Length: 199
Image (cartoon, rainbow, N blue to C red; front, side):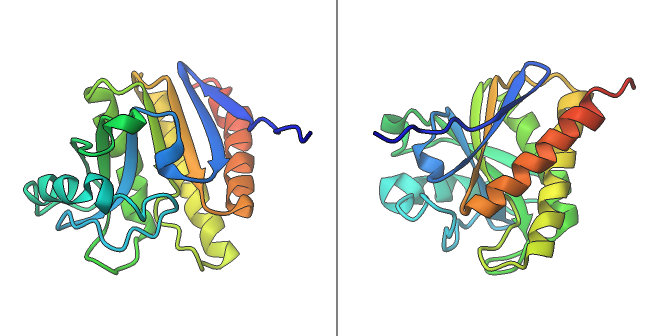
């Protein structure tokens, strides 16, 4: 019988951050974060586990997001999660990182969108959130992935230090094991060097 190796967890204040490889919709979370564009269109949904989002209610989710457009880059909005309730998901946080459908995310927009997504989730009284690696393309070079991961973790930890979000758990969902390893290493460094540093 194979033993399942537990994913490492990192505590930042009241929030536990964990990393996993798999399906964004398959996490035990009240809300999911999706990468959005300024029009609120869901796009091709290349994030693992989101390919079925449209059939599960994505059209209603998309319509609600589009009704809030145009959205500013680096912000986040919360919509309902029509069709996802049976999975325990009651909200979708749209992190606006893409200028338009098909356009790549820029690191500065991801930097602003991460704390915006955490704040939006906290204001909506969401306790558990699953988030993909925002801005990371599946075929991106390792240097690009590492740069985006470093920015995402830096903003995440900085946001948890600056404010006291009501989030109990944040799960970062990766597509590949090597991406998860990069996130775990960045979180471990942040926990040791940044979080424990006296302000």
